[in-house]
Amino acid sequence: MYGRFLKEAAEITAIDSLVEMGEEFEVIGHRWQDLAEVFRCASENETPGALLAETTGPLLAIADLEQAAWERLREILR
Image (tube, rainbow, N blue to C red; front, side, top):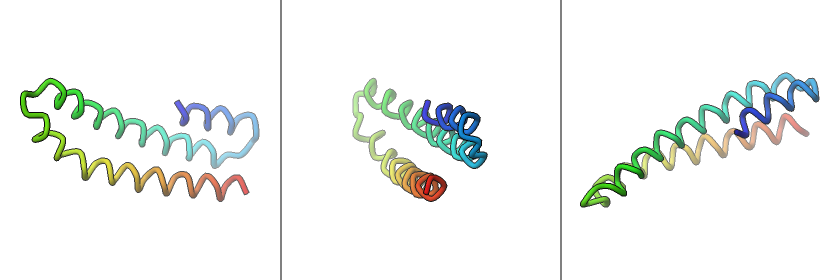
C-alpha cells in the first residue's frame, strides 16, 4: 500500500525517484506476504515452534531492507 502511495506521490510532486522507492516498498510488502504465509502455516501446525524458527532469517532480512529503504527515502526528501 505504501508503495502505491509513493508512486502516486511521484506523479503529484514530480519527484521521479519516488517511483523507484514505491517499487522497493512493494517488494518489501511481498516479502511480508511470504512471511505471513509461514506464520499462517505455523498457526495451523501442531508444533508451531518448529516453523517459527524459520522466520528469524526472513525477519532480519526484511528489517534490513526496510531500514535501507527508509534511509534512501529520507535522503530523497531532503
